[in-house]
Length: 395
Image (cartoon, helix red, strand yellow):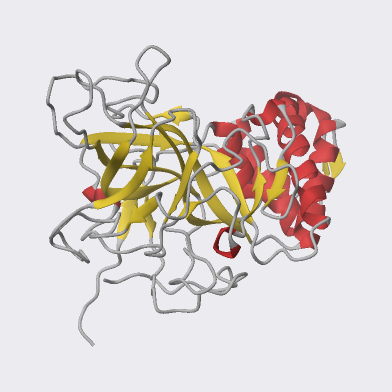
């Protein structure tokens, strides 16, 4: 057997507008499937969401929220969905991970995109990207994914006034499958509750305790802390004083999310969502900006979004496995200048996932992430156990 090279990517956000280092060779890394969600949900829109960042999108200041297609009240900050199954679509084309005629492209004619036909700019248009589900190519297999970057362009028709893109991005969510066991979740709560009270009996044989110890070590910024914590049966209050606020915040979200989780009869199809509330340094067109920099500009602009530090920690502690993104789009318009009814298309290319290097750190220049092998032909079934072993990527 010849020599093989492991595929690795940097931790953190891109350091330029080039995303290729975060997906060398533009390989497929998650399901090719991308779809829209429609109002009056059909069986294909049978979604089940635990929204970690809350019904109103207020993050840690409100409780996680559960909503699914069968509920009478499906309202949340990005729902209920207003799209139509006949007019709102994901155009898979070349594939979001590359570009038309690019490496591992599935089309040489056009880029991946979202399409809609709409005149009301207030409607909630919701699409997923790279989301593995029953009957699709396999779910994603990576942990620690906390953001995304890439390029996008909203196409404009001649009826567009001035230099206004005809679609815009309101919100972007990470989509996950949560792989933690009930026993592990109970251990997390036990450890966090102990921290909140000023000390707890640490059990090195409980994985949930060990993960909290790792977070503690980072927060204390002491390389020796982890070893000390792992060899002490009791964590004294003097060590915990500086991290009690963090423990209280994380405990509140995890405890309530676990309560929702325990109340569900069928967990296999549940997606866990967390909103990317941070616009990265190289995000060239921040959300809510309504004009391109130059008239008649048809440039693909770089975007970069990721979770804040609270939800980077929470999603990693919960063993959330990446399973695509959820996009909340809107048509551009206003009361003074209503959006006109016409087909609108927002194009994407070279989209990459972004990974945190640890609980408390996003970027890390000393190390790189070794990627798992992704095979789209594998089963799309839920609750795939990917924690026991890793098949590394040598593509």
